[in-house]
Image 1: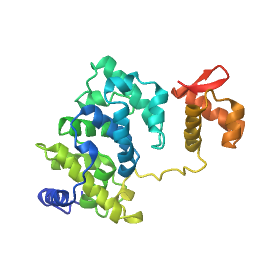
Image 2: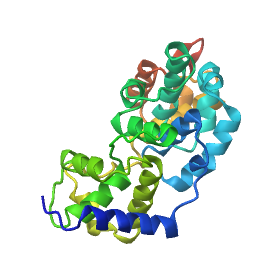
Image 3: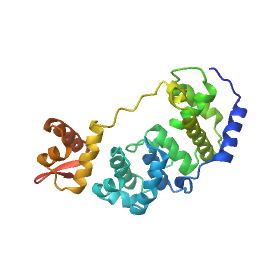
Image 4: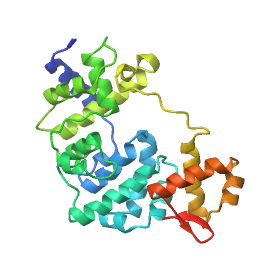
Length: 274
């Protein structure tokens, strides 16, 4: 390990930046586990600025876990439109349903239980445990990864997360993990803004992948089909071909996947939101 900075110096740099430049974000103003669950799912693969525009409105529409679990999927998808990656909205509803059914409507506090919920992997489970319950749980997300590669692996390439996790555990502020992770993420966001392109430390992560092109992709067509299904009920093949300007075979492939995943169902005259 090419450790070029002491733990004390590293922590001092992170805390000093946070005290001066810490971000004021709406989900940092709450300890409500449900609110934090919503924010963490929204923040998956989405920039903070975009999430800010949706977070408060979504919670106003679905103020607690029982309201979200009971809401029709169409209402949730409508509130999610424009945020992207609609699977997150579907899985968030399924997670809410499971929390109501299996956990007495209380968001679990332990990462192991959280990770069993739909759409919640190890990183999201660790974030919820830290931010909602102040649990000192090591986890990695984009900004945290960037920070540790920048400080502890300044020259190495293909840095695996398995090399970072021990450092994250070792340097964690166990008395105040919630705010420590805030500080790490803010420092990482700053690095992402000033070290772009090849200078971005995350380019040296073993797990780095370029995001696939969105324009013209199946992912974009999926989003368009869901948006149409929220407006036109039911959808039919003729309407989809006219609106999407693509071939019937491709439309059939995508709608079949959306039915299989639980977004759409066959209805009289075509397809509709489940």
